[in-house]
Image (cartoon, rainbow, N blue to C red):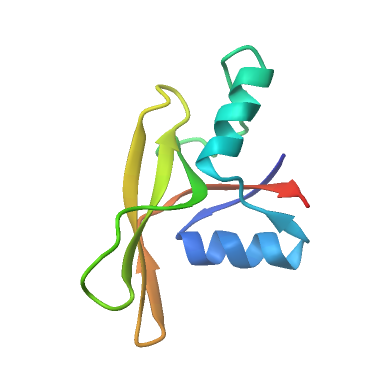
Length: 103
């Protein structure tokens, strides 16, 4: 598991792609937690929210390019949906820590 950055999903994914990594799905994160005894020891950036990206899409949106993606709180493991938008080529959305796994 390699720390990528703290950014919008599109930029975390871009960094993962550049390094030949994948951002884990929600199910993969759950498997990683289970394999480590129910806790995750992640190297989070101090002063930033403890949210962590998954590659799992959230609920579909009616607006083209306005999407959500599942993230979770690294401390409480509560899942949240963050914006992951690509409207007219402009990427925006919520921010979280990005981590990558070797393919």
